[in-house]
Structure formats: C-alpha cells, structure tokens
Length: 457
Ligand code: GLU
Image 1 (cartoon, rainbow, N blue to C red):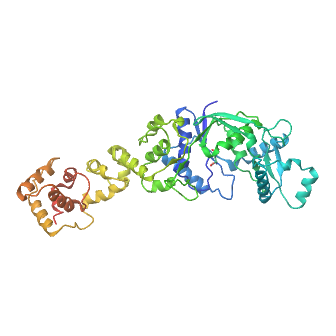
Image 2 (spheres, rainbow, N blue to C red):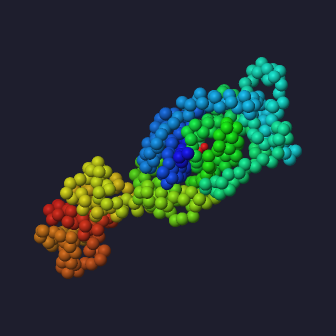
Image 3 (tube, rainbow, N blue to C red):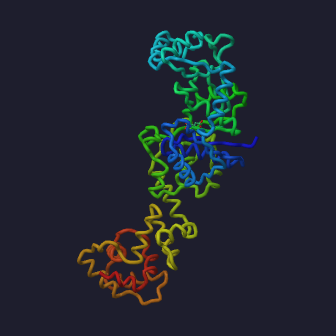
C-alpha cells in the first residue's frame, strides 16, 4: 500500500502554530516517502464547524507551502459511518447506555473511594430489553459505547490487556485497555464523536501513518481496537510533543492564539513559520530553512523530545528576518512590484535595504524615502543644520559610483574637521529622516546628485 498520511483538523476555529506542526509532520513524512497527503476536515460537529473556517485552513496550509493531494469532508461520509456503527451493533460491540453525566460522576467517585480504577463499570450491559424500554419510556435516549476487548468471557471482569505499537516519534508504546472506559462513539442526539468517523475514514482512505499530538496517545489504544473490530489492520502511529505559549499555557484554536492567519498578517515569512513549527522541541538546532526541500532534509520525527516545547514569537521573528534578509532580488521581485517597487533602481534598492527589514512591507517606507525624500521633517539641531548645508556644497560632481559616499565624506571631514558619529549622523538624518538604516554608500547612488541636493535642509 502506498504511504498515505492525513491532517485532520476540525474546522471550528483558526489553526495555530501547534496545528501547523501536526500538518507539517504528516506532510513532510508523506513527501519524504514519495506518498500522498490528504486534508480531511473532521466536521461532524455541525454546530461548531463552519465552511468559512475550513476554507481558511486550506488557505493557511497553502501559505505554509502545503498542497494536499485530496480534500475530504467527514460530513459527506455519514453513510459509511452509519454502516460501520451497524456492523459494530451486529457484533454486539456497540451498546446503548442511559446514564446522565451526574450519574456517571457519582459512580466515578464511588469507584475511587473503593480504590477501583475510575472507569465506566459497564452497568448498561446488564440492562434487559425491558429495562431499556422503561428508560426510553421515561424519555431517555441512549448514547452508545464501544465494548473494548479487555476481557476473556465476562465483560464485567476486565483483565490487563496491553496494546502496543512502535510509535514513529516516541518508539515502543504500551497502553492497557483495562485502564480505560469504553469510549462513547455516538451521542444521545445520534451524532458521532470523533473516534468512529476518524477510524472509518482512515480505513477507507487507506491511511498508512497517523501523526498527531501526544494528547492522543491513550486514544490510540482504543482506536487500534476499533480498527481491528472493523476488520482492518491499524496504521502506524506517531505522537509528537505539543507546543505551548511562552507562559506554558496550551495553544487554543478558539482563542485565536498565534493563529497562522495572524502570523501571515504580521508579514512573517512562511518558511520561517514552517521551520520553527517543525524544528522546535527536537534535538537538532532550530534554523530557518529557505525551502520545503531543505526543511524536509532536516525533518526527523524521531528527534522530537518527549516534553512540551515552548514557542517564542520572538524566535519566529528572528528566523523570518534572517530569511528575508538573505533573499535575492529575483525571489522578491514580484512581491516588490505588487508593493509599487519596480524600475531600473529596484534591484540596487533591494540589495541596499534588505538588511534593515523586519518584513517585506517595511521596504515601502524606504522606497518612499529614496524616491521622494524623508517622510518627516528632518529633526536637525541648528548647529548640525549649518554643517549639513556646508557639506552639501561639497557634493562631488556626477557621474557617481559606489565610492561617492566615501569621496564626499572625506572631503567634508577634511574641510569641517568633523568625524565619526558627528559627521555621519546629521548627514544620514538629512538624507533619510532617520538616524538608522541602510549603508549610505549604497543609498547615495540611488538618490543621485539631484535627489541628494533636493534634501538640502
Ligand atoms: N480532529 C482530530 C483533532 O483535531 C484529529 C485527531 C487525529 O489526527 O486523529 O484532534
């Protein structure tokens, strides 16, 4: 079977950098193996899932450089889920339960006080057909649980039943099915919780590997049992460590925390986001990879550490800056043109200013400075103003080459006696309106003699 992975978000909010980590682990794993990658929307919760969030997730993935081979919506596969539920009922592996949340909580406390594991005691399995009818006549509707295979003959005598798998990320894993409650697969209102549709779709889509956050490790034990109950061989599993905010708090879709959309709007480079999402919390150093091929080279799921990794937005900004500042003109030409930066000076301009940019849009301010002069009135002290005026009288004649700044400032230095900061800072302020920025030796040829003179205070 060809290698096939999937990313399966519920479209109930914006995806964040932690979700991007999961998406990229699956995407890169598939890419490395020459396999397929499916985007599957787990949208069976119709009250909270929206098409708008699904569309946004697709756009976010595209921005990150992830292009799925196929997009699947669980909401369109209800028949397959119903058939699987029916099969489980026929095998007596799906049974109706009538307890309310309060009843379950009361029983849980009793079990704890008796030093029993706080799992569901399968009381509903003891109900006769009459009992069930009576409860339904009282107005109760059942939810349905999957009977875990953790007993020999009597489901009320569960025994230690170890499920093991060789985790793609964490190595050998073991989960005891006797330490778990039979999972609820169908709610009282007849809708499916995540478990059954996920397993049914994984089977039908031929998923060979599932990589997801380590909050799913226990689920995996029950899901393997469900794959087998439905007559399927389970796929390989991998569970990566989760990302937390720098406060240690978990990231949440609903809070919009560090959403991919907000990182994009901030102007961050997508490969910086992808690089950090993949390389953080692993044994190797975090570096900004400029292409997906380079990131794929670095990707090693087994290198992820066991503990949660703290995500620092400042680190992301730094990686983004590094990537941007190394870009050749060819790589940004189209985007610069869209920002209104084009023409014969555009390349020299880019090479002059790129080292001073946080994000690409910052180039627009510098372009205006070069084209039309400082945005603000240069704030020069009276004494400096006199100095700058005198300096402008000494501007070399054209043609100007790369050495014009050096020639000019040497003459100014010898005539006025000023040097160092005293010499350069007032000139920089007069020319750009800022006391920091690109090398003036690069900017001056872009301004030209006329453009420079136009900035005379
Ligand atoms: N929709 C599930 C989630 O977002 C998918 C988990 C999985 O990958 O199986 O948690």
